[in-house]
Image (cartoon, rainbow, N blue to C red):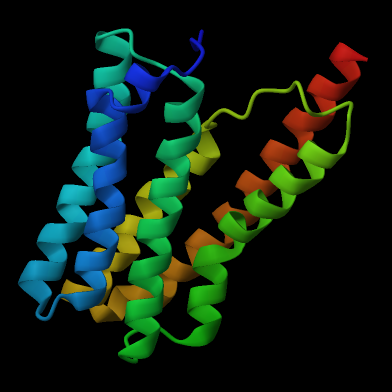
Length: 180
């Protein structure tokens, strides 16, 4: 269960680790060379795992952290995708496929916040979304190391993006009915 965010929890180590992905995103946009970019992707992946593990282990979970973590993830993913499209390593349709779930998540968040019956439903990561995040990272690695794998991985990510969006939408509807 999350605890309310306090000024001290805003500066907790897990939140600082999550926030580091904003810096890593900016670094990726400025980075040149596959090795450095691969290292930034690896570091961002590690911080994504480590912040949650640390928060649970130290019992420093908070509403702020629960919001900060996915926002930092999406900012990093967006920076990488924009960078790859700008360099011609990803086509616009591939970028759209990779970002579909993220765009739908933002739309869903605004819809849920505007619908009184959905406001109290907690937003939590679900397994299709976690698998899709890992697949997005695999696409990024493929762009740098195995370009022939990019299109098949993007196609798989597109399918999983639809599955993750449907899964989350169905969860919201079930929770809405349960709490109604």
